[in-house]
Every structure is written in C-alpha cells, then in structure tokens.
Amino acid sequence: MISIDGSAGEGGGQILRTALTLAMVTGRPFRMHSIRAGRRVPGLGNQHLAAVRAAATVSRAHLEGDRRGSGEVLFRPGPVTPGDYPFATGSAGSVMLVLQTVLLPLLLADAPSRLDLSGGTHNPWAPPFDFVKRVYAPLLTDSGTGLRLTLERCGFYPAGGGRCVAEIQPNRALAQLSLLQRGDIQQIRATALVARLPARIAHEELAAVRKALPEVHLETDVREVDSAGPGNAILVEIRCRYITELFTAYGQKGVPAQQVGARVAGEVRQHLDAGVPVGPYLADQLLLPLALAGGGEYITGDLTAHTRTNMDVISRFLDVMFEVCPEPPGRYRIVCRPQ
Image (cartoon, rainbow, N blue to C red):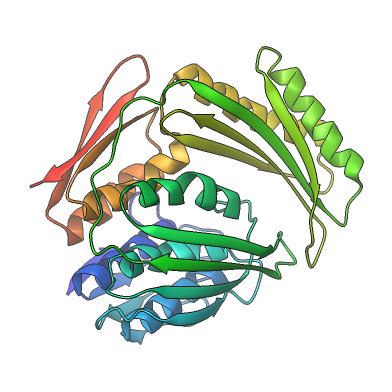
C-alpha cells in the first residue's frame, strides 16, 4: 500500500489524478491523506470526486473516502475494463481532468472505449478541450495510439453544462517521445469564443492580442458557440513543424476585454521568446506518457511546482527517474529513463 501526502509539493488535485492513473495501470493500491489541505476549500471538490469515481468505475476499484470535502481516499484498483462510460462532474468542474485521469489506462487496455463526458469543457483552472484535442492528444496519437475527441457543447464556468465525447482505440504500449526542438512556426492563430455575450468582446480581445504581438503574423477568428451560460475564452494556437502549443485566457465579469487579450498575448510572447518546444502546462502533462513509455525527453522553460511534484508522485509507482538538465538561458531538458 503506497501512502501519499496530498499536501506535499504543489499540493493540488494533480497529485490525486496522477496517483489514480498510475494505480490503475500498475494495479498498486494507495492511500492519500491531506488532499488539497492548503487550498481555500480543502479536500475533494466536484471535479476531483468525479475523477476518483471515474477511475474506480473503469478499474472496478474498492474505494473509500469518495465524498465531497473528504481529505483522505483509499483506492484499491482491479483490472482496467474498457467500455462505454458516461461521466459527469455535476458542475462546471473540468471534464478534461476526468478524461486525463482515465485516458492512459484505457489507451493501454485491450479493447476500445467511448467516454461521454459532461460538465466544464472550458474552465480557468484546467486545460480546455482545445488544448487536449490539438496539443496533448496528437502527441499520444504519434506514439501509435488512437484518440478521437468531439466537442458537442461548450461548458464555461460557472454554468457548466458542456459535453464532449472521447473515442479511444488502444495500443497496449506507448512509444517514447523526443521533443528537443519545435521546428519552423507554420501558423499562429487566435480564436475568441463567445457564448451568450456580445461579439464585440471577442473582437476587442483579438485587437489586444494583435497590438501586443505586432511582429507576429496572426490569423484570427471569432466563434459564437452554444453553452448553458455566458462564457468567453481566447485561445492562441502556435503550430510548429514538430509540435503544437496553445495558450488560453478567460473573460471575467469586470475585467476589460483588452486586459484578457493582453494576458494571453503575454504567455504567447514568453513562450516564443524562450524558443522551447514544450510550454509549462504541457511539460507537466507529458511526464506520465514518458514514464509509462519507459523513457523519453523534452525541452521546456522554467519548471513549475506542478511539474516537480508530478515527478515525485510518478516515482512512487514506477521504476523510472527524471533528470532535470539545465540548458541556459532558462531552458531545461527533462529526461525520463528506467532506474
């Protein structure tokens, strides 16, 4: 039985999701205490609870502590069982985090699966649907797996009500990734999503992005989308020869559209100036595919607390090690290899 302190390192829900994924893949049970103990509202929230229950359903696990606000969970997995599953967060909680919790175990299973996911698809505290579809999933697909993602309806915070479908064709093994350069930039595209809000908000956000990135050849698009409640997001996709990255900012009541556009442009500027293939959010999420493939490497910028904490959790379940090799200025090569 692996014992994990959920308040260690970054101390967020990612610790729990990583542990769930690896427990399902390895069959090793764990007990986690002090879950999100340092957060304003500690313990399991709706989206964390949905991820725990989804993992338990997929792996026929024995589960204790699965209640809202719980600070401790016992998870004893059985065999991963592919199938057709509906999962809901019951709120605007991120369904993309639920998907990422069960995705790799189902990719490594012996039969296809279909997940019908409802809740938040565009949530400020999680990767949006577009990031998973355009950035994360293609890297897994290049590793020999099949993943088809379809967005049926956007779900913005706080109304939620979104829906997407994931169709998973398993491969039983992941190939090792090597992402040491991004290659030539082929396209930079900014897309502003608006639901039940004036379209001028989207145009003002895009104008702010263009102003902040005057030297960038920027393609732009405004999309009015269906949603249960009002919502707005601006997505900037950087498509390069070897990898695609995507950065997002969300509109908030009382925050000028120009400020939202400038915020995402700042993240894009930082990424372009760094010259690295892998951005800070993807750097965290690639650790699991690398570890389950038995190795791999990538180059990124300054490491986040999420990334360092994820390395520690992975090493509790798998016999792999991560090396962080500085490649100045401000670049790091992350190498995963068997111990």
